[in-house]
Length: 335
Ligand code: TXA
Ligand code: MG
Image 1 (tube, rainbow, N blue to C red):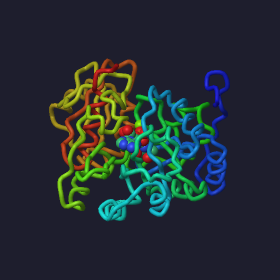
Image 2: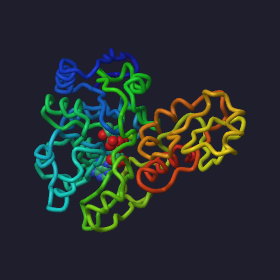
Image 3: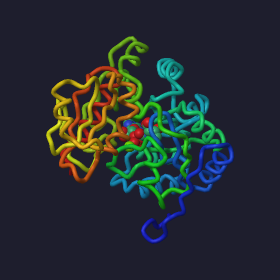
Image 4: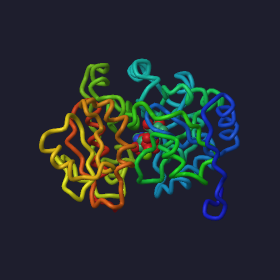
């Protein structure tokens, strides 16, 4: 395995044109790491069937524990070789793939996915991303690609190639640059292993859309249940600054992340802040726009000279639930 402390890799940053995608496939086949754009966030990819390649992901991210990873596939047929579908899960896959939904399904007995990738569980998390360059890379590689978000463990997920470079330069062979991620939040993780559909992680596909398609309400995984998404640590997606939630207006020493039209009270308080310490996730109050901006704005406002990052209230419906989930993790006590 690459010794990350003594021999940093050379990291290439290339626009995701056909030549770069072919290069990515060759590197993946050789067991190297490639960061690539999806519509949710940038992923740090490796051959999901190669234990050593998967181990490099954990090393590059400094992941403290072997959380199970999502296997990314180019089409439904490829997914059928890894997990067992039934009528319900196939209908959900057909409705929402490609897109920001990860399905946790029973692992097939003959599934070639690395046991390290699935952390030894008898289920597997599978995702079919919508971003065209990601699908081209998956087709060129010809197998499933394990990919967590392409950030160091505990940091905010990257939504641009520059974010990836700042976190993983010297730890990844190639970064495929395909611009900013349109969704901006990680995929929704839905377990269809048991009779009761279980939401393991709110994300880029809203619960309401899934419930409408299933015709029944989703159960929410309890944060501390062993069945819940094992990677969902309370403190995660953490900026360097402490975070104050549901802040109607900033205090003078804070940076402020707003949402929606600026109120008179906010306007007065914002006049006291330097311009680089204030951003609005969506001045019109659009939750999709807010989701797309969330991680990039958390990075921009993580200014060492401010004492705290205050965040405006975000409505708790649609993508607002996933945004609030990430914000609560950003605000959780660090440990
Ligand atoms: O949008 C996304 O999902 C991005 C892009 C790159 O696809 N990936 C991502 O991966 O967010 P990661 O590793 O940060 O999150 C994967 C989540 C974790 O919460 C993990 O615990 C859960 O999926 N997971 C993976 N396999 C699982 C399994 N067999 N059972 C339950 N949860 C699982
Ligand atoms: Mg992550």
